[in-house]
Length: 110
Image (cartoon, rainbow, N blue to C red):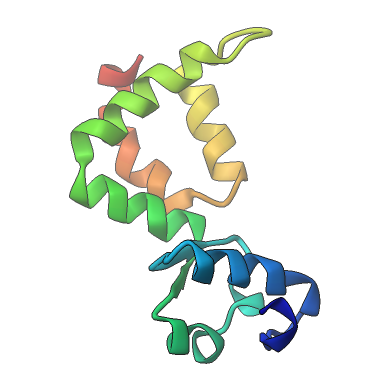
């Protein structure tokens, strides 16, 4: 199957093949240009940037996302991160929208 798929970067075909085999509806990636809608549409798959995916999660299951955002920084070791350090790290990873959505809850996350 991998050899039959067409993407801008042949090295990404295995990712699409895995998504197809797993009946995925969404492929989450930081590199949207490698997964154009025209290549994914025949398989019913949508490519989303990490930030857009996180924002959709915040919209659909806000309590779960807030719980994860509260717990994750404390699980990091050497040393655990403060909520501000955590939000800064998310922003560096390209999740600026997610940080904007989470920042009003920073006091609850600390």
